[in-house]
Length: 143
Ligand SMILES: CC(C)(COP(=O)(O)OP(=O)(O)OC[C@H]1O[C@@H](n2cnc3c(N)ncnc32)[C@H](O)[C@@H]1OP(=O)(O)O)[C@@H](O)C(=O)NCCC(=O)NCCS
Image (cartoon, rainbow, N blue to C red; front, side, top):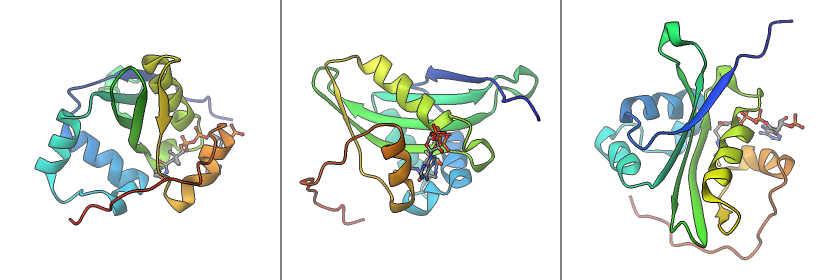
């Protein structure tokens, strides 16, 4: 059985928008994100204050990016995890769980983490112990 690749988790506020785009596309989340609008993706990275990445520990290949967790937070009470994406080739290896663990570690115990799940990922959030919140509300963006 091949060994599980080592994955490096880090905060990367200056993540390149094209790299972010590639993971969105490779994960499947690109179907719900503006992957044809690179300047908007660049704004999403530049104005998010907590961007955590997962990279394969493979320096010979520039430590390829395999996962991203992009959140906005006040560092004191709440954080919204807007995008969690793991490239298909790296799914099922604990990368998604690791990205959320690292996000929570950086936020610390005083900060709640919230998100909306796409239908296919709800089982993942349940399996890592997140609670469902029935009375969530939003105004949907218009474009
Ligand atoms: C959902 C996603 C982030 C999960 O990341 P991942 O690295 O594949 O998941 P992990 O390997 O960390 O899995 C952790 C646990 O969740 C389980 N799990 C993973 N995906 C699951 C799913 N879709 N449904 C149910 N359980 C799931 C795993 O079996 C594992 O359980 P275990 O600890 O008992 O073995 C990833 O599959 C992904 O990027 N999917 C496409 C994009 C997406 O849906 N993003 C979320 C948007 S809200």
